[in-house]
Image 1 (cartoon, rainbow, N blue to C red):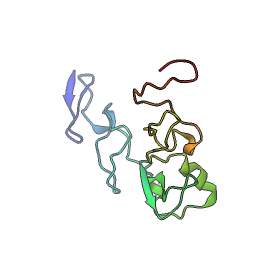
Image 2: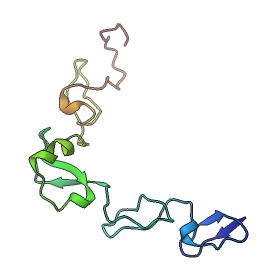
Image 3: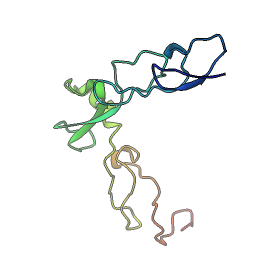
Length: 135
């Protein structure tokens, strides 16, 4: 039977004898954390205080050369040390914008192109013939 859970505002199927309480809610949480991000847990569980949403921290040069790193929200106010810099640089979402051999700009991100070392295939229909003979 569907019941309305007043604590969270969700509707959920439950047995007739079950009380409609948040601890029985099977939906995703919609509460907002103190940092402003949405809780990623389940409604029935307590919200975490360790927000892992990715945020940019400027003033720290990533290993890729960009002037920011992306860190989990809960670490945004902590100093970025050399040990963590490798992990944080792996998340760089800056546009790659490297000029590819076909003459087009790479449309992927820095981290997806391994910081300029390996690029994803050109996404522009440019007419260039690739190494395998495809256009």
